[in-house]
Each structure stands twice: as C-alpha cells, then as structure tokens.
Amino acid sequence: MSVYISVISFLVGSVLGLLAYFAKVGTSRVLSRISGAYIEVVRNVPLLVVLYLIYFGLGQVGIDLDPLWSALIALSINNGAYVAEILRAGFESVPGGLREAAHALGMSSGQTFRYAVFTPGIRKVFPALTNQFILLFLFSSVASVIALPELTEALMTVNSDTLRTFEVFTVGALLYYAVSSVLALGSRIGEKRLFRW
Amino acid sequence: MGDYAQFLLPLAKGLGMTALLCIISAVGGSIVGLLVGLARASSIGFIRWVSAIYTNLLRGIPLLIILLFTFFALPLLIPGAVFSKLACGAIALTLFVSAYIAEVVRGGLESVPRGQFEAAEALGMNYFLKFRYIIVPQAMRVVVPPWTGIILAMIKDSSLVSVIGFVDLTQAGKIIGTTTMLPLLTFVVVGAIYFVICYPLGKFGRWYEKRLTVSLGRPQAVDLGPASTDLLAEEPLLQVRGEK
Image 1: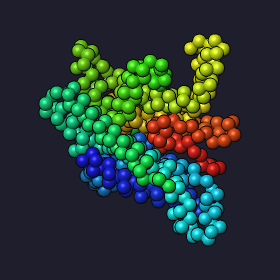
Image 2: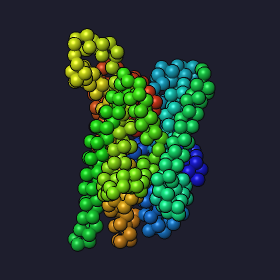
Image 3: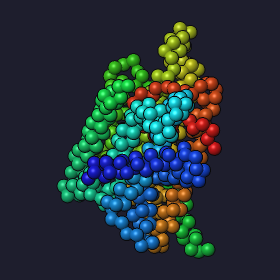
Image 4: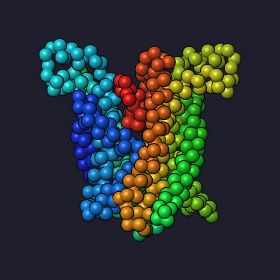
C-alpha cells in the first residue's frame, strides 16, 4: 500500500509538476502567477494540514472522499509543487545559448524544449527526482493518520495486537530504511546507466 | 466576539506550542547536527563510521516512525523514565533534523579547500582557532541557505507531533474543526498560519543565497554530496533570473 500510493502520487504529481513548470515559465502572466502561487503555498504548508483539509474539510461542503483518495490527492498536490521546483532549477541550469542555438536552427518551440532543454537538463534533474520519490515514499507514512492501511498504520495495528512495541517499530523502521536504500542505490545506478551522452 | 475567542484562543495556544517545540528542536538539532557533521570529517575512522550510519539511518526513516518510536518504545528502553509529549516530539524532531543538518555541515566543510586547513595548521592554530577564524566563515556561506531550508521543512514536519496527541497548531485545528463543525475554515486558517511563518523564512534563505552569489561573482556550484539533491528540492541552489 505504501509503495502503491507513492508510485501513483509520484506519477500524477510529476505530470502536475510538469504542467506547473510550463505555466511558470510560459508567456502567460496569469498562468505564471497561478502556478507560482500553487508552488509557494504547497511548499509552505504542512502536508498533514493539506491532508486534513482534503479529508475533513471537504466533507463540510459535501465532498466525501475515502482515505485512499484523500491521501492520493494530497500527496500528488504536494509532489507536484516540488517536482515543478526541481524541473525549474534543473532546466534553468542548461545554458541559454543552447536554446538560442536551437532557435537559430529554426526549431519550433516544442523541438527546442525537447532537444535543447529537456535532453541536456534531465540528467541534472534525474537524481533530484528520484530523491523526491524517496522523500515521498517516506512521507506516505503520514497517510496512516487518516487510517489508510499502509505500512505505518499496519505497524500501529500489529503493535496494539501484540504489544511488542520495541520490536514492531524497529522492524518498521528497518523496512522503510531498506526500501529507501534500495531506491537510492537504484537511482545511483540509473544515473550512470541511463545518461551516457 | 465570543465565538471568535473560542475559535482563536486554542489556535493561539497551539501556535505557541508549535513555536516552543520548533525552537527547542531547531537549537537541539543544529547542535547535534553540527557535532555529527564534524564527526564525519574526523580523522578517526570509527567516529566517521558511526556518524555516517547515524545520518544515513535517520535519513532513510520517516519522521512519523521516529516519532512513534520515541513515544511508544523509548519509555520501554529506559525503564522508569516518563517523557511528556513535548519531550517526545522534541527528541524525535531533534534526531530527525540533526541528520539533515549533519549532511549540510559536512558539505560545508568539504567546500573549504584543503589548503585552507593546512595553512591554518602551518600558522600554528589549534583546533578551535582554525575553525573559528578560517573554516567556519568560509563554510557558513554554503551552510546557511540549505540550513534555513531544513528548519523550514522542520516547522512543517512538526505538524506530525499532533499524531501522538500533542496539542500543537495542527492538533488544535483538528479539535476546533471537530467541535465547531467547520473543518474547512479551520484548516484553511491553520494552513495560512503555517504559510505566514514559513514563507518569510524561505524568502530569507533565497535572499541570503542571492547575496552570496553576488559576493562570489558567480553562482556557487558546490557539490554537497548525496545530500545536495534533496536540498535542491527544498531550496534550489540555482536561482531564477530576476525573481520578484
């Protein structure tokens, strides 16, 4: 369950982040403002508060969401803002001359982004993105608060069933640590393998 | 007016608790983080090894698990000890934050060229003098921006202590939301309060970073090791051109 919600919210969040990035750097002032406000608000408000807002708050206006949907929405919104920031920082590190050269070669703006921003930039963005995924995985534990049966919630249940508190939480901590270590290792290997240009 | 008092007073109390918790953890986490960061640059292999395990382990475990661990398991480890919820929250946050700060401190130390250490030693400076006059002023520039990012993240993460029943800002919001039946409004207000605290801090981090870029005449491109990427997520080392 922890892995499931992390993967889904990472994918949805990444799409959201990409859209927010385009809106932020785009020519439309209004879109840029909206996207900027979205990024700033999400980055400055705790995930838990957003989660409560969606789970408890929306119920007040008649939108009742179950814990799974609430968690997915909250984590995706959260992840989207961070991904947008990562993309912006990474793509901005690509020298502007490359973009100008692409224009000079008569590329369309789509082609320019594809070849002169995305391709050279993704190598710098990749480690930050995988790191964000690890952080997201660790933060998915917060979803246990609204009784979503993921890893932390399972630990709480096992704990109250067996009362072997120390063992239960040690195992839980090690499980999280193992998964995040494997992800970090995979990221490092992927970084070397995927980007050879 | 009575309604507002009923609404705002508990929130103000919760805010005070959040502030208290954050100040304790920020100071504690910075001190522990500094020590662990220095230990990672130690000349003794064993100390380096222990501090590396400390940072890697804590960075790979969710704060919530650390928090539950200190709340449920710590009293079992130290029989007879009674921890208040504030103490549990402060211990968990301090541990969590110190690991991230240690990584930043290590990055800062590594950003100072070897020659500077050697020059200080050649001048006959002792350990304290060397750090006070040579290393710290140079490392500070690299350490401060990500440090503010970590503290900012910690303020947001402190909302998790509500899970163990500590009445911080988030928990106060939850209680009020239930009693007044206005959860939407309550959580918007709570979110706004967090925003008002965190936003200026983030601005300060970016302002400091920009000042730094100007004083160095070029963007700082320091490799902070494995930590650099998640710092990027909090506070990008790279700046937007002409940001607001």
